[in-house]
Image (tube, rainbow, N blue to C red; front, side, top):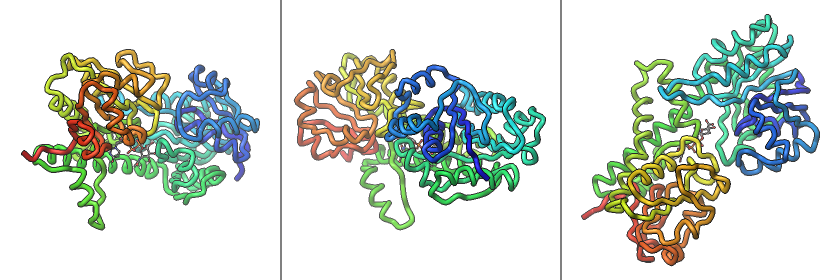
Length: 426
Ligand code: SAJ
């Protein structure tokens, strides 16, 4: 089975790397996004998102003539839907973008075409929601056209590499669809391709991210306990992790991003009465920014009148992605607490958060600050020299919410360092 032309719907963190990767593997690709600003930005040779290696890949794809950018869906042999699936305020999956993408394929759908859904979706979305929409074309899923789900499991920051090397799960609505999906992804996937059915493939993805969420929740609870009981959670975790079957994750200021903090709700929504653990883990992680804020408040005595330098606003280290970021939530709490805050996010030089005062430079952020709060473990922040930091700041209070700073070095530099998950022993 050969796919000479593919149309990728949605040019975000997943769609753009997929479209560019396919185009650099000899496939004619139309990358479409319904947001005209995104297409315009890409046409100017700029990117609307940051991901290491992506700019060069997009350039290569466009220059080869094999990646065409468009506002509209175009006829193709295969269609890949890679649009967002956010949650609503009442924690239900918002499938509007998926439905609208599927609807826009209908007029172009031909016999023998393949449609792949990559957007993280609640179980049964492919069979119960996408198939019926596509069948408005008069064609039957699994009979006239092929339809499969393939979850995206790449880690932001390593997307380009993991897109090819990660094991790829493909689940069709029937065996022919699964086989067709494999043929398409084999174009660029070097990792193992695992075949299953569509609903299992959807579940796999949700189970992975839910497991990670639960594992982070327990790490966060350990941090709370350590704080209460006079233990250093970082030391305790590193010792526990020497057990051959234990791998405790890192506590932190909360769980952000568009995946782990969202996906478990898709399972809760599917069956609330049998998913208390998943719900509780979500609630624990959602409450972590508040816990972290209280820690900061405790370290400062009072927020009022203090000038606080906040390091990092992204949802995790070394990425520019601000979606569902606990750091932003905490920055807002600090401000509401009456402090004068100035934040620095080196991965987002064009930051346009109106309600959070920010600077473009570390020096300006730290200048005359009473306290510095580390909210994201960006490598450059973890490597900061406390002696140099001390020279710029006026106060000597430091709060590390991510386990990034060496307590000995910071206290030798005269700082009173408060760390998340480290209780006082006296
Ligand atoms: N976090 C912690 N402690 C940890 C690890 C992470 O507090 O030990 C926090 C991070 O700071 C961040 C959040 O959790 O706020 C999520 O970060 P992450 O690195 O765990 O995950 P994501 O959201 O960047 O990517 C996840 C990955 N899923 C798994 O590892 C099971 C990735 O493979 C998926 O492709 C991605 O979700 C997705 O798109 O679903």
